[in-house]
Image 1 (spheres, rainbow, N blue to C red):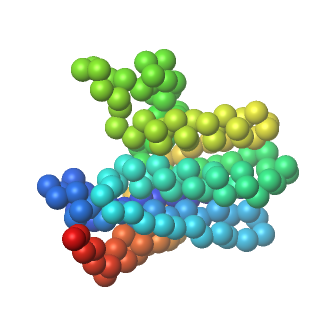
Image 2: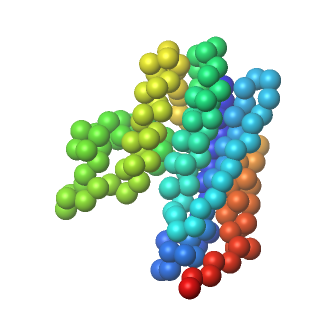
Length: 165
């Protein structure tokens, strides 16, 4: 199976967190079909949406309970995610219980913990998972499609007003 993922955050790192509008998109290619997944969230970051896209795709595949899946290829334009897995950063972070200097937890540690749990689930089922970095906005059709999914879901939040009483 092949997975393309992307995250988007409008006004990423804005001073007012309510202005940070995020979206994520994933496309799962099973051979027979393409499955599009997407969602959105306020008060988020681009990295959180990138991680959410991968996690949601893996959850979907896990729930499909497809025992014939021996290989998963995950394509992401997020070096943060690809390097965390491929360069062993995640394993190092886990040995320190996701703590960084100053006694604080690493940003997005809960999402990395969830990604690690899913990753291990597939490995124990004998599924090989490969994470590959793709360049953003470079004309790769599926990456452009997940980018559009993520951006459109973030844009939806612009239309929804929140009223705080």
